[in-house]
Amino acid sequence: MKGGSLSSHQRARLQAYLEHRPCQGPETVHIDIINACNLNCVTCWNYAPGLVAPKPTAWKAQRMDAAVFARVLAEVADASTERIILSGGGEPFVHPRIHDFITAVKARSLALTVISNGTLCDFNQLAELRVDQMLINMSSASAATYVAYHPNQQEETFHQLTKGISSVRGRIAINLVQVINTLNAHEIVAMIDLASRLGTRASFKVGDTPPGTESLALDTAQRHKLTDEVIPLAIQRAKALGVKNNLLAFADQLGQHLGRSEPPACFAGYLYSRVYVDGRVFFCCEHIEVGHVNEASFGEIWASPPYDAVRQRMHRGQSYPGCARCGKHDMNFTAACQLAKLQGEWVAP
Image 1 (cartoon, rainbow, N blue to C red):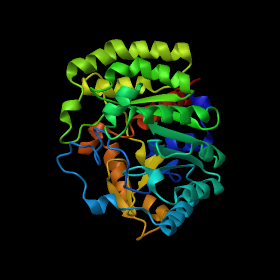
Image 2: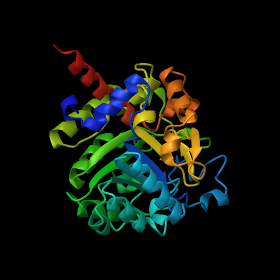
Image 3: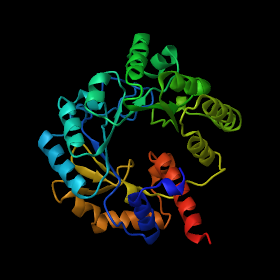
């Protein structure tokens, strides 16, 4: 994205990052509404079949109360947030009030992204509710690989899902999320083709391998092949087909594991915040706790000393263990590129 296309709010937040103090609330607030899920993705931290330490039943039963959601939504809107993400430790469409939550977000004229596996969605209803964007976890380009990645599903699920996605082409911005590991790395170029057929964006990320799933991790040789051969081919294919993608960010993420690049700077304290299903507020996807919505308003938490302490720690380059598998890598990579372009504008004669 060119610096000139940034909104005034985006420019202000990047300037705030340089000054090490937020001037307004986060651009995006991510709200987890439920932990239950209907799938068992093979590398999921919460539901993978081979997990060494499966989540307890009480954790899986957690879901956000409608009154808490309404209060949090009002508070984040008051903090100048522009986009809400709805998701969960599981599948948000398991929540019985999900459509009410969507309606409430759109009633405040906020942009809305829903992260989902898509299997429980009525896509046409979501288009009517004016959902702006959906991130659909595909992790495949074929029915066979879809079943390998989601072992409690049948191949028909893949076909139903792609049909549903195609039905809202041009009405909802769909981003096919491709979590890459040994099961599906051979399909990266085919994933671009799938996105072209369905009229979606393609988004790639290196798959986590929580304890019990390590055999699915990409090895060094596979990472080299992806960065040196496969990704360049996929970039060419995406350009030829006009498919929007994050392949440069994906290559950068792989490059970090190969020692070719450094992680991008962390912008989470200026662009993003996460409210967990139980009301805790997290700095990012790493579950770094900075407050609780039952103890203070979101705006108060955002401006609080504990929140700022994490911001300043990240500015000093003192990362957390989970930063090595950063869940907001794309956001940080994009923001770093935008900031570099803006700084070029600011110093230009």
